[in-house]
Image 1 (tube, rainbow, N blue to C red):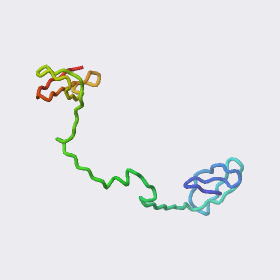
Image 2 (image 1 turned 90 degrees about the horizontal axis):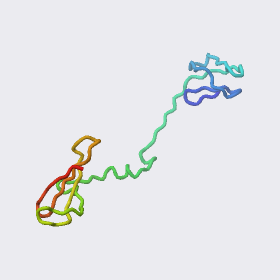
Image 3 (image 1 turned 135 degrees about the horizontal axis):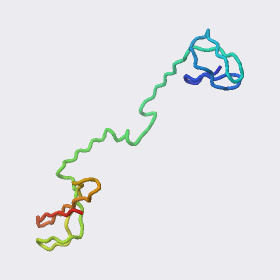
Image 4 (image 1 turned 60 degrees about the vertical axis):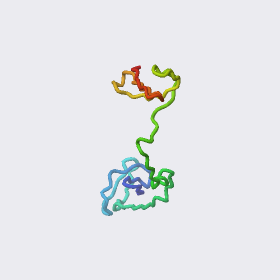
Length: 121
């Protein structure tokens, strides 16, 4: 009999044997070839590993802390749209999904002159 984890195999033909009782007194009979196999007590395998055994770029960078202030994050991009107030052709915009998923986004425009407007696409 050969055991791999909790599975027990016949030494004669290699077929999977019925569920092991985990006692040396039990005899397992193979349904395929009829061979008798002595049962063995279940064995526990304990493995240990250290984080250094599995190097990872994410694990290496997990101690790096980056502080970001919300007011410093640039969430707008530049586009070619004309400001109605000053006539400037390059303004900043951001797209926000304010309505349902099957609806278009709302585009918020901001000009350097301070003018703000939005469109629903």
